Image (cartoon, rainbow, N blue to C red; front, side):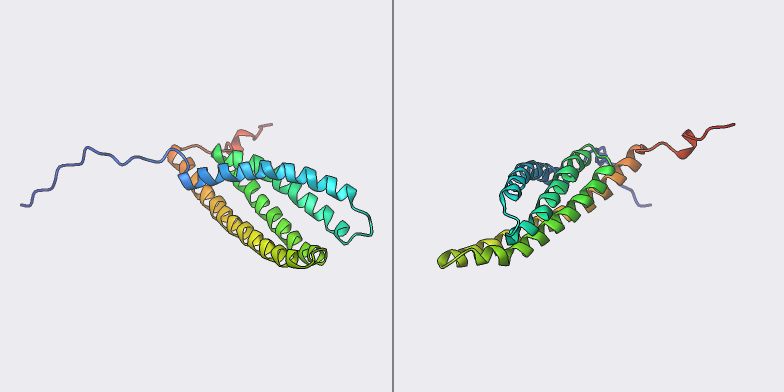
Length: 176
């Protein structure tokens, strides 16, 4: 007869919160969305100061409204993710869409802004713009991973704790 080891007195801890990766980047994106709110205000002022015949005048509304979308969905979305609410992930995906639009507008503006540069400033502009876009794309990819992982973690936490965000439909049913 083979003896089995005694049961371990250490019970593996169950997770009661979000991972550090999700929490850390949700907080980071929350800060970036708040900074974006300031940028949107300046973009709106810049749009108002552009003349109607300016090339950039056509791109300004897209820049302002994509920035507004990032702020309006990103701030509450990140807060809801931190509160472990599934709706935060839905808002997070909206934030991703508006961020993609914003990056698209930035790419659209590159040739227009490049024409305004001359000499060595033009080369610096191109280098800085490419670097800025690479950083924005990298942050976007990480945020996509965060929202996807947050959705899985929030589902797992809800199942582990036996809680659901919405009561079953039968709670709302009325009898004649």
